[in-house]
Image (cartoon, rainbow, N blue to C red; front, side, top):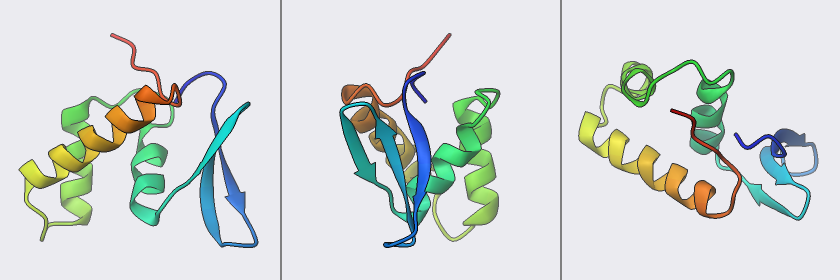
Length: 85
């Protein structure tokens, strides 16, 4: 996640929000799970996809990869995540 973005639980909706100083996004359960796996920044994309595939074996690996990349692209465009080499 970007240095200024953080995850926060919203008690009224029972869902997680991804917040930054000027914006917030209500996350569905899966998006929250993906971001939780990213905490600490130690997993590669392949490791992340592998862990998700273990949790959701009924979903094809390519579909997981596509959905995760789509999520990251959307969050990166909003400056809510940052990728480091």
